[in-house]
Amino acid sequence: MSNTPRKPRRKGLPILIACLGLLLLGGAATGYALRYGSIVREPFTLLLPAGTPFDALNDSLRGRITSPGRFRLLARVLQLDRRTFSGRYEIARGTSAYRLAATLRGRAQSPVNIAFNNIRTLPQLAGTLGRQLQADSTAFAAVLLNDSIASAYGFSPQAFIGMFIPNTYEVYWTVSPEEFVARMHREYLRFWNDERLGKLARTGLSQQEVATLASIIDEETRRTDEMPDIAGVYINRLRRGMLLQADPTVKYAVGDFSLRRILYRHLATPSPYNTYRYLGLPPGPIRMPSIAAMDAVLNYRQHDYYYFCARADFSGYHAFARTLAEHNRNARAYAAALDRFGIR
Image (cartoon, rainbow, N blue to C red; front, side, top):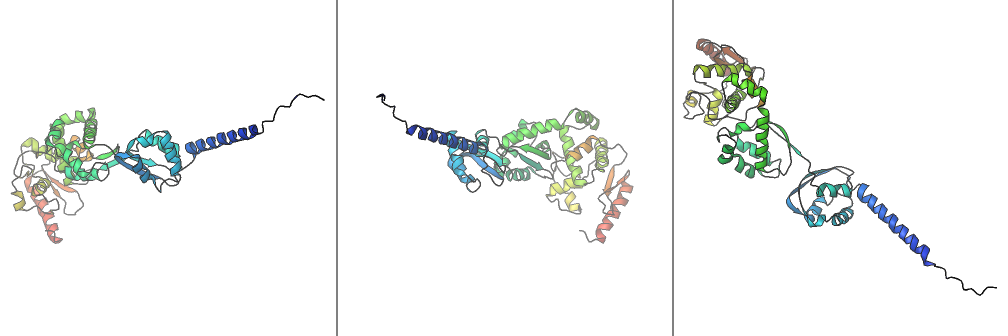
């Protein structure tokens, strides 16, 4: 029988290996959960004003994510707890902690679709923007009504509204008023493409005059198929040196677009916008001109009409006339229709 001593058994080694295996498995499970495990059951929009600290971000996520501890752990690993945040983020159902953290870390904002049309004034536009973007209406108004900014883009304060082409635009929620105006100028230049510039020469008007005339046409009719006819009337009158005598300009001068009838006292309003008293176009648009109306001016219909009046059937269309006598007959018919319905 050998007297060689036996080597002691390492009883703790299997336990150590098992523990390491469990740790590795747990780490893998945690990593998988952080990267792929959903912490968002319902989609939500996260709005973070500029300079939002990490604690305020956490407050915004409370009740919206199912595993705030998992997100905080990952955020500390990525050192997000040392940063500030800003922007608008649309967080989808099924978003993981890793995807949420990566979105915020990369400032991958979700854009906003800003739509504006049927705008009469720049303060009204400022209010529309302030309701949809981070900057409030006061901040937008301070830029939109700044004469120096209008001048920097080549516009007078009265004509500046014509630079804003009504449409739907994709912007970031954090866009500043100055950045927004710069974007609108780029859109204005894009609107005036080679095709439109080619048609512009035919009208004898400048780009800004097209916007001014288009704004009057927008107020005259909602019938887009009739707009080129009305544009033709006004261009005929401009070329002959006649007063435009456009009722919408009187409403603008009076400050009341709700007027149903233009009376003699309204025609006496002393304003450069009153085209019954002053030759040519007003100093600027009387509202934000639509694309349809501007294209109607550029594609005005050539005819020999110099007058038009709303039809007595209230169809929204107009009766056109070549002579004043013919126009007066149309105007009397329309006035009689107003009287029948008691419209004052």
